[in-house]
Image 1 (cartoon, rainbow, N blue to C red):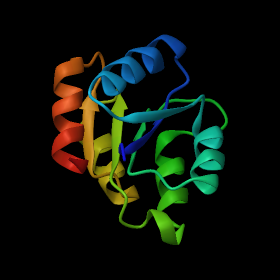
Image 2: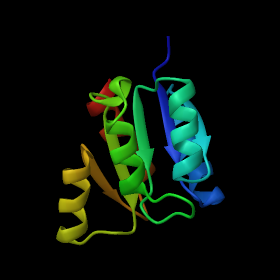
Image 3: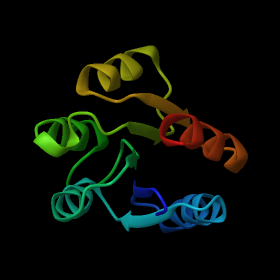
Image 4: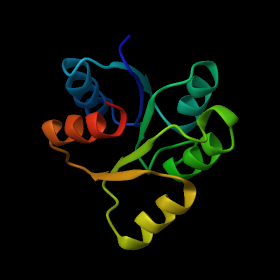
Amino acid sequence: MAKTILAVDDSGSLRQMVVFSLRAAGYQVTEAVDGQDGLDKAKSQVFDLVLTDQNMPRMDGLTLIRSLRGLPTYQKVPILMLTTESSDEMKSKGRAAGANGWLVKPFDPQRLTEVVKKVIG
């Protein structure tokens, strides 16, 4: 059974690149258009990994991470930030919210799949 990934980003073109890269590596990927959409989808299915942007309408990435970590089924699920935000302060906030890792946009598709493979196999 393929591992499942929830990709949350308000940029359609970026989601498309993430989905293409991860599906090519054998993962099943579900897309969400913002944090609220991601949270709704995460409540209806448990994913093996969540990949989220920070700056999105309706709900940002940090709020999404805190919301997911509040759900019993997502306390141990790896969550990676994929964002243009790269300051140490923002990374500290991400860790405090419960993010397991950080990738900066623009991303290298090969690096993305390497990190995902390292995190969930």
